[in-house]
Image (cartoon, rainbow, N blue to C red):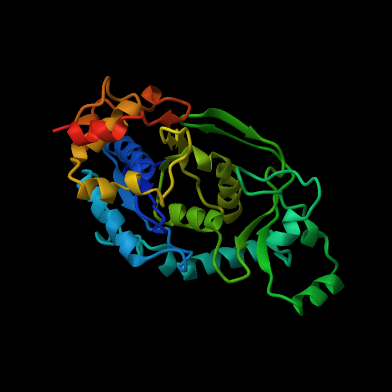
Length: 327
C-alpha cells in the first residue's frame, strides 16, 4: 500500500493534554526515523478531540519541542497541506459522515450504560489494556421498548458492535498477532457528551491523510484490531502498524505528562542540548552503542526496526546527569 505519488506516509499524532515528555519524544523520534529512512512524508496531526483536557499552549509547545529535537514534518497545523485541517477538533464533519455510514450499515447501537454501571458488573472480563471491564453488550440486547424508555432518561453513547470473528495481523515489531472474536468488547465511537471516540477518529484521519505506516507506542497495540475492523467497515485501506517499546523511568514505571523532570521543555529550559536527548533515546532503543550526543538526522541511515528492543526500555538512574553533562 502506498500514499499519494507512491510515497510512504507516516504520522506522529500527539495529544496536547500535557507537555511532551521523553516517552512521547522517543516514539516521535522512531516514527520520524522510520519514514525519513525510506524517503517518505510525515504528517503531524493534533489529536485534540477532548477539548476540556487539551490546551492550545500545550499544542504549540509540543511543536516547538519537536523542532528543537530536530524532527520536522511535511504537513501539519503550522505547515498546511492538502489533507487539512490537521487538528481533530476541526474535523467533526468527517467523523459525522463515518458515523452515519456505520449506523446505516447496522454496525452501531445506542448505549445507556455509565462507567459506574460497567465497573459494577461482577466478574466481568477485562477490556483492552487498562480500560477496566469489557463491555458485556447490555444495550446491544435491548428491545425497542426498553430502548425508548432509556432514551427518555439519558443521552446515549454510540458503540461499535464487534463482529463474531477473530482478527489477525502482522505487526512490524511485535510480529504475528491474533485476537479472539470480540476482543475487548463493543467499544464507544461517540461519547454521550458528543465527543467522538479515539478509535473512530484515528481510522478516519489515517485513511483521509493517506497514511501507509504507523509506528506508535506499545500501549496502543491492542487498539489495532478495533481499528482494522473499523477501517474494513468503512471500506478504507488500513496502514501497516509497528508498536515500539515504552520508555520507563528509573523506578520502572511508565512516564507520564505530569512528571516534571522528564518534560522535554523542562530539559530544554535547563540547558540540556537536543543532541543529548536524541543520543540518550538512540542508545535506549539500540540504535547507538552508547549514549552520546548526536543530531536526529545522524540516525536515519542506520535506522531499522530490527535493532529496537521488543520489551520496554528503562532510563538509567543517572540519566539526567548524563544528558546535562553531554556537550
